[in-house]
Length: 438
Image (cartoon, rainbow, N blue to C red; front, side, top):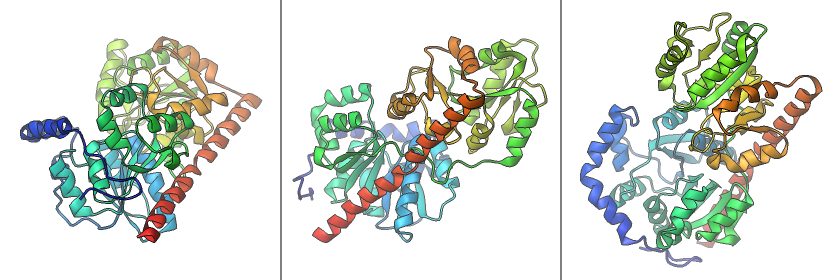
């Protein structure tokens, strides 16, 4: 039955949305199998995309949806804060990408946590998931707003919450072109925790209620800090010797060439660590290096258990879960996903280590955080990869300038680290108020 309450009846989705899903349903299996062959799906867990599960799901869990790695970090940080207040509470986190699934499965936590792949947004698959899990709350991280997941949860009287919420200019324009769909989706939220005031206003313009929308900030900071490996750190420092260390973190295809050229331009006084966002690209990056540097030996790769040799120019760190160690040894950091229209990556992670960042112009997914860090002088903006080498040289700080920068960045990250607890308090207040009113 449609949900009744202080917000009234949950608006129905426009018929065209679900008609599209019904039309593509016959080919969804082919699409998923093809994606699995490309490494974009887990072939052993495709049934989860249809809302089918091999074992019973925990009932009355707090369900958090996070599309990929950055959103999963935010979601897992929120889970830690909620679990600290209620250790026996079960949690479900759904993700879309294989890399996010690995992050969730490898996450060290005392929380009662189950990871699943998100069911496709077909009404049948969504209803299967909701029937099987019967969550006590549905929390959507960042900007992954799936109409059926959101509205069908609301129609079952499951409180819908948007956390660490933001939406790009382009995405907001798309939603505005479909006002009926936007009203149904954004009007379903009982609580919105936005990353800043600008985003709060944008979400309200799309249909969220102003009186239940709050500016809490981004939650993309792992609780307890990022893990470091002393052995890896020692090996990297030994390979660097007296050279400075330049880290190109979370690069995407199309950015690696700029990093390779910058490394060559920096010369013998620098050791470059190239850590792709998707580790499976390590081999293609090594091949690209040899194409650009004819006759050069292929760079060593962490995924092949190769240790960087003394004097080596570039070492490819094509593994997961080791970025903390890389930030801990780096002198200068470039954050990838920003030279291309991908949206940038999380500057809070290097900020934990006192590191300012170099970034390209495409920051939509993390604009609020970059704006905040830019205000304390922690961002060097470049417009293209051609400017990278000069930005790296300028970004190397020493003495009092380095101390002041490190202090400002760590202080900013420390403040950001308190946000999951604030968000958890908002969420638990909503859930407790609902319980008392029933």
